[in-house]
Length: 312
Image (cartoon, rainbow, N blue to C red; front, side, top):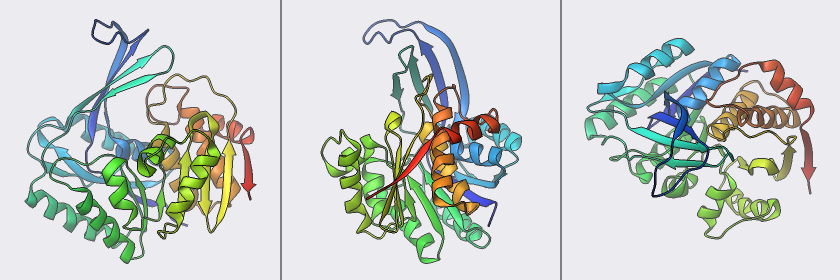
């Protein structure tokens, strides 16, 4: 059992989230309330893990010109900040949340990472390898970091026996899968994108994910929103179904699921308990704006209402 984990956010962002009644495309939309906070998939995972009790080290690339909100967040979390500072400003991403629960993401490309920063990051990764078993790679790639380079980093950790949880999409996901991460967590849309056809049922998702098992990935987790979560491990499928939730925002729900899966494995929980906990954690996340655990007892209550079954 371990409490130590490294989360890697290669392309963090300041998230500007605005709530609108309805998004008027091509016209004016009035924002009812808004927030600006340090984010990025790996940063979100780190926040949830630290609230669960993990000893979190955060790394990746961070723009030196607007790092204050990140530095403050890491300090508040009690995280060990090992981000590589690079020239320029970390991007701002815009998320518009409609009253219906629909979210429109406007994601900017981020700063360009030069060769010296890449070398500094690789040295940092080797340093962190000395004392950590669990590594979470989450999010998109910045300019200057190719999918192939990211895959090399995953493979490097894999060869050293590290447990790499990898949550990305598009070309980064495709390249990373071949590097044999220990766990991947595509959602149904990302899995559809990967296999090149729209998957509309849990059964179709299961069939598509099964093809990935041949690549030597120990854990394949597919998140399907209200249809729950499926997990393939050692040729056995499990499916968790949470109760219906009042959706406020789905932003960060996938990151919360990754954090729950990581924490469950770190604590060596039995498989059904691990999956029901991670699923309940993620289900609760859609009832709030922003990432984090307000009350762990709410998670426990929801976990009791989450069913887990083995699929044949």
